[in-house]
Image (cartoon, rainbow, N blue to C red):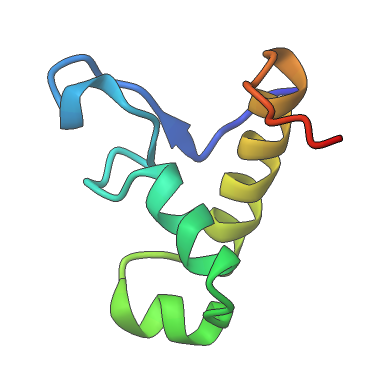
Length: 76
């Protein structure tokens, strides 16, 4: 899968994945969506973003989870 709106620059934001070279980390966008913030509200707070940026951030996060094993707490 190719991500055209996600950039990683070791000299910007510590090399974390960001949206289109902006100083807006993918994790920040995913967190706001997880908190129930609407796309419209996110764009109001980050006016440089576009709806496509938010969708791609979510796809990127989904792919990142698919590609690595995350620690899980097993209850039982």
